[in-house]
Image (tube, rainbow, N blue to C red; front, side):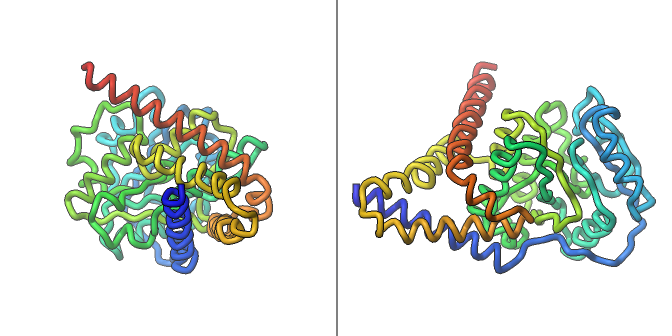
Length: 318
């Protein structure tokens, strides 16, 4: 038991260290003033009636050389090969973009010679379910991955993606046509991220810095998928996170004197505050909801892992 508790404490300290690194390095998309004229193709998954607010926000942009494709019944990957733009921008139908987003993303792509850039949106909460579930994918990502190092390391271990907004170099994306026909666009994005890393090309993931917002109101299944795609945790990885990050602190609280729990409690408190400030969320509300969010995170990770195992079994049978 003592060995297990030491591992729990070590894992907690490591996660706090990653969060502190992210907080100090401030991995946000900059507001760059430079203007570009390269053609971009904006691909929106869904039907026109479902994404009117997004279309209105695109219409208010200061970027003129755009082509917009709404997928309808097709997958985003299928329509990507019809695109004429130098860059492909995949946007979730619940997203809202602000002025400067496209110029800032292209600036980042060109200056750092990126093949893919993923942007973590700021959240707009519409109900209590959103308040509980929406912050979890950002919590998991910022708690486990030093975002500034994603661009610097070619190893697939540093693959991460948020499917709300992704910009690709169109030519390189189209080279990987073997991914066409996969129905889950999130899986496509993550698999491409790993492929890009395997080829020693550069990817990056940054926080939107108020240039991109995502509306709430999604289903529990959708939030489960977001967690699944955030870091593409394996079944073993998800189980290890549940045991050491979620169950472990409860065991510490039960087994040891309450005074001993001051250190882990302080680390959890500081972690939630730093992540809240980075993502533009209310730290007090996140702290208040933390126990419910951790129970929800456990449930969603179990659901996501079960779904992945079902899919893997299906593929094996085929």
